[in-house]
Image (cartoon, rainbow, N blue to C red; front, side, top):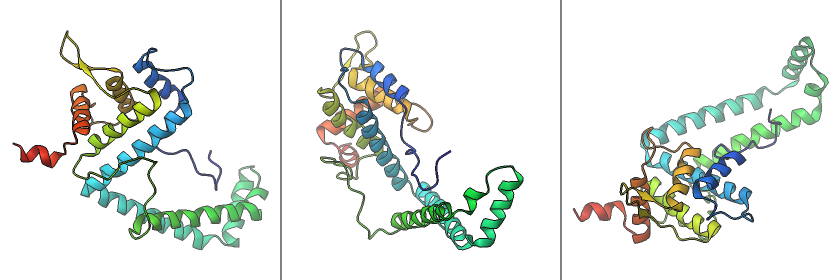
Length: 233
């Protein structure tokens, strides 16, 4: 159980086993024993978190639903803060005593202050999310997220993964087509394919094909955006 007052792991965080599967998909000729796996996991988690936010912003229905849920959470947090009085804590203490748990912890001042601080921080964080006038969360150095809003969230993600691939493995993102079936293949294609699988990123509940990954990479490398492609038809 997460201790109150301590931030839980990010929703887009991945375990060590997931990182191992991603590296296995690349092959031993690409990976290195000196690779910082924790750094790779953290950067992947960041890019996926930004991707998911971009998906919500791009879909009005999802954005409306998130606003509704965030409003409900903020209202509930405010209600909890307003009810944190001596009577409530006495009731909690009696319930814990009945269940043969330690009631002293729930009557202690540090625990009460910790819970109160956590709920206030939750309200403030949601307020920051609602207020567009506040400065945005800074992107990692060199990031170009948001620079080309005409691109789809998936195209942005593949483009950023290409930069991460070069940074972490010292290789340019590229691909070739297998002679046997003409399907795109390369360490980068397998890298993106496994990252999408580990973070459960799908296209309408279907896995993105290698053709989709290759096309997104090609568009990112040439700087072509969706509106540009439509205008050439």
